Image 1: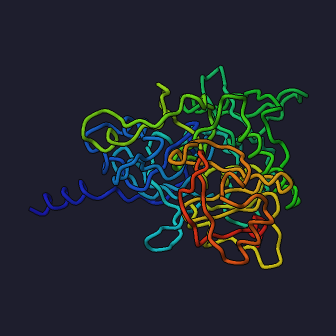
Image 2: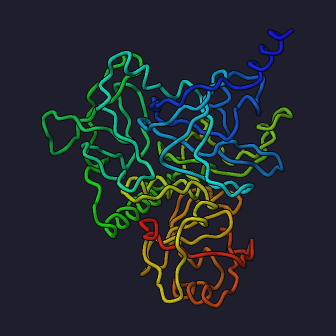
Image 3: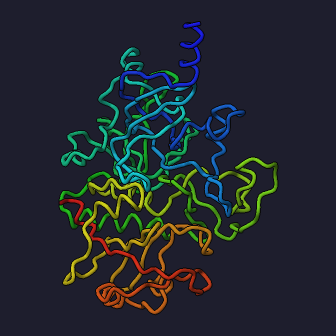
Length: 409
């Protein structure tokens, strides 16, 4: 009888393992809040993760379990294993739960997305060829390693892999070139590193040391993403924190999905593109990714984390490029104080569904300049948010203006 009870316990509960380091070995790894088997118990793990909807639809059911995404070469701590999934802790981001208001750095992901350090060391992998992790430690944004960061997506023809902007590689000490950067690329199938050559125009080679320079780079990165080659855009992806590809803006449309009665089929499909969208940003994910690329010690993955950790604008402050405009459930970046524009990853329900730069007057009714916004903010008057058609969709009494520089403490 005892052995039956023990078997039942092992079957139900995840296998608890000693926390061990691991490295992400896929270009983009999906992170969720619960094991995907909870949502889709009758499909195989790879199917569950490959078919995560890119956005929730107009249903009361949770249709998009994605919370975050990791990129190739990022490090994690493995806390538990359960079938084909692992429970991990990440060092470079946290979210604040609406229920308990605590900071969380733990997620579930597919086991095949990562490779344990123990396995790497067993095969005598040169660990120094992996970039060190970005962590919440004050000195973690600087490293003695020579690292290159992608500021735009990169396709490696030799392996057929599309790498996201924000992916970091250790620079190879081979012959220098004025046009390309040589970097180490780990091959999980051989446990060896190959040398790849990345066009320099796709790279960030030197992260600024000065805080103001970091913020300037942050805004430049966002500006380049908001102005992709027309008519292509970076799509809004709920929980998204990657940029692998762009999509034609004119192919997006709102239409109810047709299918069986499962959760995913009842979700609304927001695009007419045959291929599934696998990368993009949500409003907080785009800020997190660009901040890390610019060397800013910013680690907030959701808007609740932003509200709990950044310093609000004081009565005598002015807004600067890179500062944040926070409303419940959404956040925007001050893009240009002279042109009075903001950059955001905007959802589909207001007619956008993309990363873009727009005048603040198209975001809030009656607010034409940032000076207007500060006046309304100091007077504690509500904001009226507009959709793409210029109609008021929501009155917002509670909102905040945050100084990005406050993340340095």
